[in-house]
Length: 434
Image (cartoon, rainbow, N blue to C red):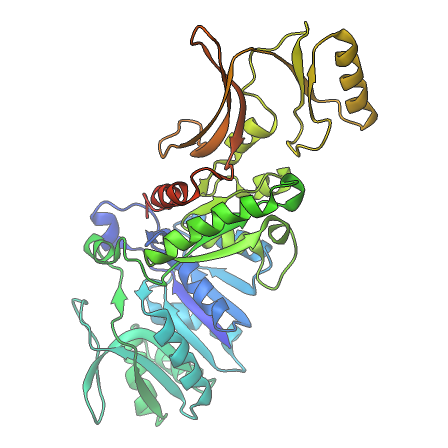
């Protein structure tokens, strides 16, 4: 199935109400409007998605270009038009030859009902299948009269190639509104049916966003990323268990969550993982590889990629020394293999540990001071962490005089001592800004 999105409007009413973000990029329920439509179309077997946006907000075109570069079957046109009908006219040559479903960027509908609508259109022999609703939130709704009822146009159009001939006639005659085009379809004798889609909203005002804000339905998917096995030697199941428990906690609250492995994130698939990243309102990530961290930069992430790097490289270690007793710790990436962390009671042990690292090709390490005292493991969940390390754990040494030394800090530990409690708190942090 082919899809098209008209996203060339100026969004003047929203701008007058203080929202300066271009309408296609406005986030509702944690997801940009245009990203939501693209995701839904991909879920409904999109072979190609055509988008038209205006040249007033270049950030929209830049966003679409980024998605295209990720491998989505997406093409976009940049042109400011005088109406939605003129926008459709601009992309009409790209839609010739096969049926397509067209929506405006600000229409908000139930995903399951839309999937059923797509199937109905594919099975229908009609020239057009117009999505309709009985919910009215438009100042000037277009009423659709059928034999059974009076509906309101939902801004969703399933059309066949011959409808574009009618469109061209409307343009030649100087028509300028989509409602005139819909009337013309009937005038030209095309068979146009109505399909009820339940509640459908147009996002035209701040109040429309408020009506939808915070709803916990299938309107978006949170994303969880399992840590690659090579970063969890001996604790793969423990690491998976804490993320599984967090996902379960979120799902019990009604959130939709998708999970992938760090390996899958870095692989090629029919639906590129970068697209999953761009559409998720929050990413709960245990990933540690530099490749994955680069992909996560700029995304709404728990934990922030730079905070994970601080842990990977042990940049929190400031109590360095070159006098034993001390600990030699690898600082390129924390794989925690044998020989990555070595206690050196004397100079001979230090020389041996360093030589062993260099023999393995490891040149990045730190020598950390050794402290005598009580060894304590700690865990923390901080939604307001200044460095973005919201989920963490580590090791501390408490000396006899009460001085506390943080000797190890880990991003997203397994929380094996308090898994259930931790999972519930991580879930709360994940949904704070949704």
